Image (cartoon, rainbow, N blue to C red):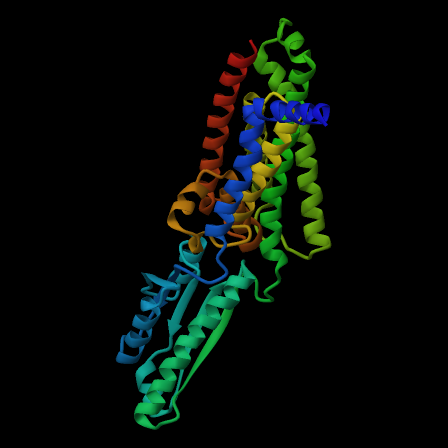
Length: 368
């Protein structure tokens, strides 16, 4: 029994003496609980709304005030003409446009019938359905109040239009998110494990002792994974179009360029992870478990960014997958031109340059 306890003590010693592994093992579950507990929101919150109201009468004002007073919506834009609707959707500033008919109040009181159009961003079918249902509920409550006050059978008919995804197919939402998660996890994991394996076996020191500069060694190890990732990207696109029936409505060339920039970011992140750990198991934990949950929860893949707490929205800004998912939805699903994706592209290029620079400097310090 004494010998058994000695072995148990020895194992605990081996576990606790590796501080980095302990931080990963304990820190990742704590981080996941914090992210899941605060970030997952199934209800709507802070959906940005634009309004086109040619009537400017008492009924439209009351409806707009009720929608604005709801915790689910923010009246963020007042349109001067119907033509502005497409422009604000392209800029990604809103998720709902409310278009009132002409002489709304007069038609409601004289004919008991008035129309209002709800133009919803359908790239996320779940959120789109909830948005239309919530606004429909507000309109129904107002209609019921009028009927009780006037004893007249008022009827407000909402006409719902799901933009970009009229059939509300879930694949339109999941394909861009899956692309971001797959590239982030696979690229980072492949790169970090490949470099850490060289360090663990001692061959990295032999490579660094050669006349070749360290930067060339690192880039040479990243190039094969870059090409493999591009091949995976092509397979995903083919499966999305021919199996999942998700169309590529935008520029295929710009979609390729945008994705290749993101792949460089993910590979650079894997290089950074390799400079922080010395064992393959640590690289797997850091690049796999460490990145998976933030990418799934804070990238807009599963839950709208607007619905999570403000602090986590700030944190999500440093997650490359957030910008990639948003850009791919615009290019692939919405089919808008590249000028509306320049923000996401510039952010990813900046991230790639920063992460790669820091990683190369740390790589030289740790191994040279």
